[in-house]
Length: 277
Image 1 (cartoon, rainbow, N blue to C red):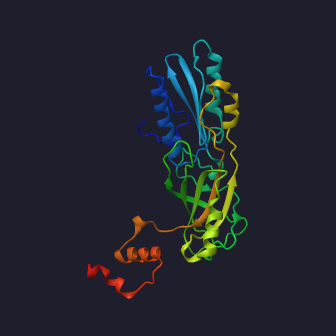
Image 2: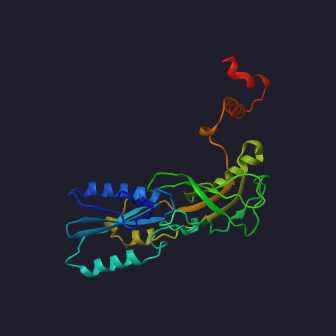
Image 3: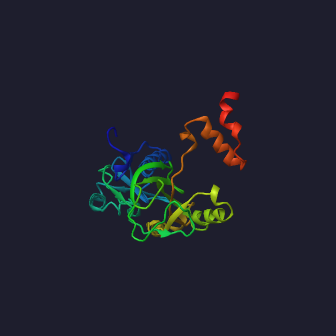
């Protein structure tokens, strides 16, 4: 709807077009918008309305479930319960991610503080040391992956805390539990070449507390979603903020980057490469 941010919508809905498959795809598009604006939802509910009939949908980072239709007029009790549930529930019960600071989506200027306790990473870098009870305030959302299911990676600026000599970011990602953790991979890289590996200072892992499994188990055996269910967990990583390639300001910085990539000695003539070519 014009003038309404998709991040504030509690129950995305699709009016039926007599094409059930098309309706479900359109609702999934709405859900992707809602869940990708800041990637700060673990899950979201939606609805498909066809005349007086209604179906309720649930989407998370691991699966989706769509209920059978019920008639609003013939079953007003169920309809009333749904209205109460979706209007009275807390933001967390509607799928908003409390671990990401629990920002009020209706007040985009509200202060967002990371509510997780991050575990310091030893030998992660010399520019900052994460101390116990360090308060981290999240700033602008730098990146939010547009997706419905999967990692849904998002990256937020962090207000520079006391004792930090560099800018920081926090990365959130719903990763498959069997996959090697990023902080472990980076620590292995740093043990070989710390000068060309990212600095990382803290990490946390949040288990999947969504109702996905219970909803899957509640489905009839012959009508369960065919695709789930990769077990995922929310992995959080505090790291140094680096300049992206798009932010390079001049040819000198670009050449310096190429030299670092190729691990060559930086020789003097490349400073004037722009004049020679």
